[in-house]
Length: 175
Image 1 (cartoon, helix red, strand yellow):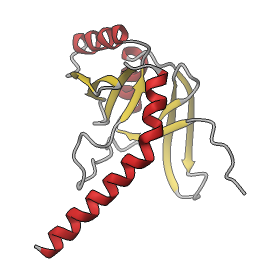
Image 2 (cartoon, rainbow, N blue to C red; image 1 turned 180 degrees about the horizontal axis):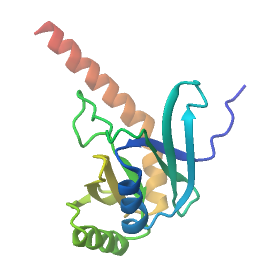
Image 3 (cartoon, rainbow, N blue to C red; image 1 turned 90 degrees about the vertical axis):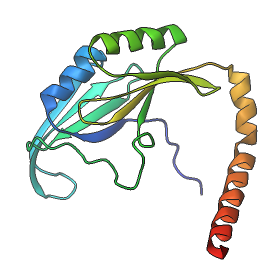
Image 4 (cartoon, rainbow, N blue to C red; image 1 turned 180 degrees about the vertical axis):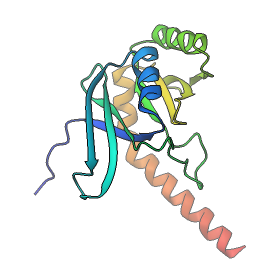
């Protein structure tokens, strides 16, 4: 029996320090409309008492970025065992020209932007939101045919990585 089809991302949720500061960044700067707000005192899934507001910003494909403001002006701490560049949310834009326009708008608003970075199949810029969440705006730079070709090699490449990783770990233990 196969698993049910997963059709796409509905939303990805983060903790935010301040719902209004977050709304300003995502709605006014990134132009993602605020489309839904949930206010509650108890968490529906656990019943735990924790007053919060849950805000949703819609992307062009109908998926959402969502945030929880727990009312204490605290943002989520970064993972202590992970470099700051690892955990991030990558959002797609239509073209390299759009990427340049986004970079200019962010920098004009005082947001520090890294890139444009060439990843050989995409180009990207990176920046942090007011909550310390690393965001990536990215656009494809190769054809669908090229991506299909790379997909044919994906399992082989993942297997090579697993083997190399195991060899390094074994060598480190033996050293």
